[in-house]
Length: 121
Image 1 (tube, rainbow, N blue to C red):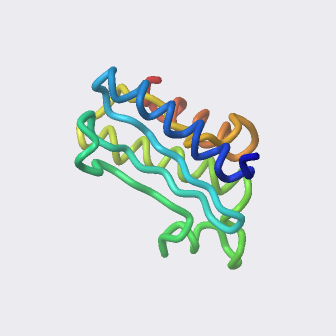
Image 2: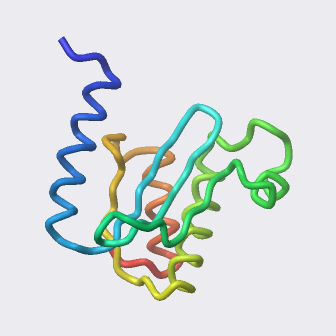
Image 3: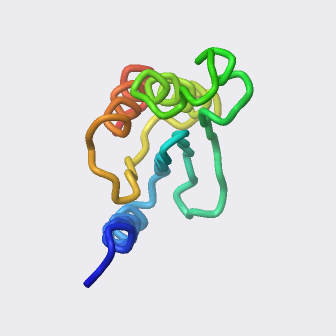
């Protein structure tokens, strides 16, 4: 019997294999109870092109009080921020890697904000 975490990691591994065959940059998401992290990784998987998280000092100031990084509003800010950084680096098309997390709530909010900011996936 697999634990919940092992099931998520299994789904994530399968998705990464599928994305690797495409050879396109991928937007990865990781969420914890307190924070959400997003990175754009090159097509070969060897280099982080852009990243953003609620653990950054600038984002924490924008969110206000501590502990406010684990909500949908924070995820929207991170989605917009990582999309702007990726576009500045010349990346416009990515594959979305949700790392086995359900496409719901904070993950969905981050993806929608990144699309609204100009990333295509």
